[in-house]
Amino acid sequence: MHPMLNVAVKAARRAATIINRASLNLERLQIDRKQHNDFVTEVDKAAEEVIIETLSEAYPNHGFLAEESGELLNNSDHIWIIDPLDGTTNFIHGFPQYAISIALSVNGVLQQAVIYDPNRDELFSASKGGGAYVDRRRLRVADQIKLENALIGTGFPYRQDQDVDQYLKIFADMTRQCAGLRRPGAASLDLAYVAAGRYDGFFESELKPWDMAAGTLIITEAGGLVGNYRGEEGFLESGEIMAGNPRIFAQMAQVLGKYSRQSA
Ligand code: IPD
Ligand code: CA
Ligand code: CA
Image (cartoon, rainbow, N blue to C red):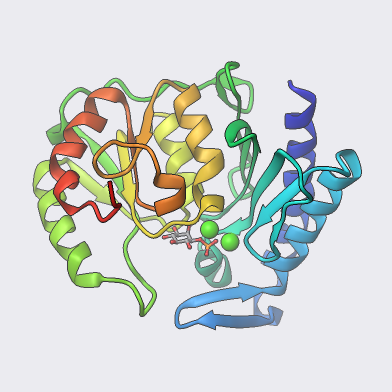
């Protein structure tokens, strides 16, 4: 394992210890509201702290882009992109679908990625050029060739500032053309599941870089494609993301392309 990936795995496991301990005592959890339906807990913050501490002990000159602390770029070309707890709403409710997501970008290129699911004890990882893994098992995207037989993951709007009406149009269109849509509630795991072939594809908009960065590398290393709704670059900045094996990706773009809001 690449030494930087190794440190990221250590950081993710330390965060998981904090998350697991807190999950045994959810009624004592202190919950704050960032905005309507957007929650953060002391657990998100403590998990992020231990991740940043672990990484900066090993790499004191690296920078960070982390959900709860924002940008601490440190003038470095090595930036760790961190979601300490992806799926906070699930976590608060004891719904066992959430994860820790950590990626390393070097000069804007994703190089290392870890997504750890503490409920199933599954560790998804990838190093650029080295393939993608769940634990020690090599990952490969699904070989599904027809959208009509595909199981597709998605995420739908839940904050007040989001466009539910636009999503409902997309939902109606996509649900008629695939075998099933799922919305488990942790984007990082949704992406890991595309890499693992558990879904044939995934789409969501208004995501943040820390929701997508690790999953993006894990999917491409598993032979999948990631882009915006038209299948193009720029999704890490726009937050509009679509992923799948190459055949499903192309068919999803036929459906989703007309709804793209990413400017060309
Ligand atoms: C959220 C989850 C969810 C997605 C939201 C994200 P958070 O992350 O990934 O699946 O639909 O857009 O914000 O806030 O729980 O880290
Ligand atoms: Ca997230
Ligand atoms: Ca989060």
